[in-house]
Length: 373
Image (cartoon, rainbow, N blue to C red):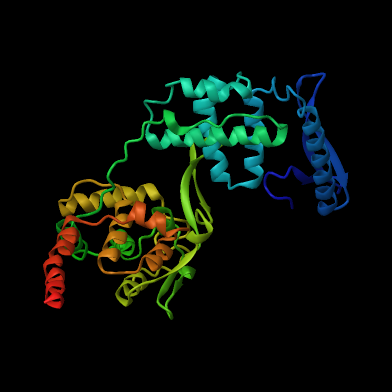
């Protein structure tokens, strides 16, 4: 069978049909045409040929001096979203489609593609939104512009992030006293959710990775766990439901990794053995919202201020660095593609650690003086 997004299907009469989109100049709208074959691969080859021919034709149409002058942002955006749907993860497509529909479609849809950058630079439309959302909007904008430049040979100006007022917030970790209170409370009455929290404190797993952990990901012989899946709740195109829990591969290639764990941690996981598929969720992944809710309850019972679940990952990384773990090992355990991400985003020296480092200076200076003497 064809992959999702290929527009290839097997007909009732036994033949295979592939559909591709073209723009009808007479009707002034997109239309679909079909190619047929006796096998899936035959139709796929025909479909690829037709798309390549169509792309060459479009390039010739828009390669003149005034190329793309009449191309609307909405047309380029819709074509780009179709490309994303075919080539990227479904969750990525849904995220981009939602950003376009909520923040870009009404505002820029009827504008010419060559006007977009100037309009955005002069607008304060998104200034009240969070920095993260503003960056996502800017990212989607520029990807659409790059698509138009690539497919229609249009010279378009990139939308700069200068309009985004960035205020870098300090990333929190649990202080040493808070960690002491948390651990003291966790070991009082062990259950599934407390074990999940401990596992994150000892491995730095992301919430989605934790909820999607399967028994087959545990290697009891080598005392390791493998990260092969993640889950997240995303918006759906089904009108009956606003969102659905979707399991997929980890967010990047480096996120798929093997993490060593302590013997104590492996024993706690063995104690949860339920003869089902998922370690924390039974026959389906654990709902992340459930885990977040239980985490807040655990903090409340321990007398700790309410925090986001991701603080466990930041605390794990900081503790590893303070215990002299080399940055490369930590980066691979966290699943980062570059050690710079680990250093800039996940390592947060505490005041105690800084004081300890400063406290070593007198002895260091003493050695210098001793050698000088």
